[in-house]
Image (tube, rainbow, N blue to C red; front, side, top):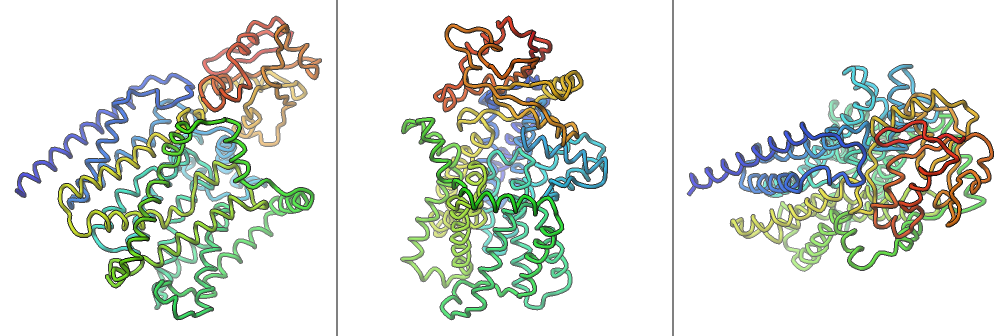
Length: 584
């Protein structure tokens, strides 16, 4: 029987490596097609089926004790998914902020210092260092950085969960579930808040190990201090979360409530806590630009309270007028990686509550602490969503959810409690693998921006970069530049011209054309002098291929046809994904 199992494992491993090689060849020889709204359409469906099978098979292997081969397959599978944008020939996988960050890589690499506006330079310093050491272009460095942090997230989650739940079966479940694409599209973006959101699990491991070490030995103390000193340079949301976690530990230590002993909360040294706020406020005071921004934000808050993220999100959802099935599809694909594990977590909490004798087992010794951490993280998340003071773009707050750090180990424990605690039969293990691969599949089809999640592919193409470089060499600073949607001023950041400005005008809906008008200059009175129009493919396809934008209907395909036939403008540049027009 053991021989038969080994043969089956060998067969599964062989099939996985064949599929991985096949997918790698597809990636290698894919013909770049320029910008497409749905990045998933670039490959056949069996390409994704190969990834799904590899995840399922590697889950089986790990749960049957073949951890090294199973984890190797998971790593290769994960790496190939992360390489999709690069292999499609994109310049970068993000626009707007992502372009500014690449420009900052160049700034640091060329001058040796970061810009005054850069209030969280850790990511940019890392990117610049990789660029200098490797000799790669800054945009290629951005792909390396996101791959690096994606694997740091997986490693951090595993190390932290191993400290919490050292039982072998649960550790195996953590390995598998940590490869679920929890970061969504931030697996492919070089945004500081996304990258250091991925870094937090590793910091939690360092922090917990340090607090649990009553002797405070020198190596662990040095690692803790050095890593903590770096936190203020990462992102304000990271500082906010870790400050809250520190205070939670510190307050419970001060209160010394005997009933809280069951939580097994490690003791926090006051001096250890002070490292973070002191280093953060030192950086705050040093950074003159940040202090200026804080003052302006304070004045703005006195005059008008910011709209909370929750209200902004509901307002946007109301505008697209989704039906029930559309909402269901959106939630499953975009947020299924949080929703489905949460169902198991709630069910397991109820089960363990009514079977509290389980907590006497060493396997569950840190369960109360993890649940408490989960609840604290949930409150922090609600604060970011509901408060009217600290606000951000909705998808940045909602996509990166702090409950994740406790969710993964608790989810692994929930799966163990319901399916593997009493029996590890082939049926139980197969059911577990089916649950995990289902959640992973939802995360796979929601991790890249596409019409499936009411978003368009945000990748930037080389021909757009070349076209804008040509255009900026042509035009003078006073020329009016009109665009439908895109933030083309970010190209200045990309080219290292942070303080260059465009006289930018945005068109009204449908370029201002009415039913009986075909002259763009006449219907846009502010364009009474010489002007240029920059038209990117992403602007044209957004309202043609993304269902939620189609319903809003700011632009139709006929509007772009009218623009191209407009006799008041001449096309002076035409590349695959960029067209530039000049007024006559």
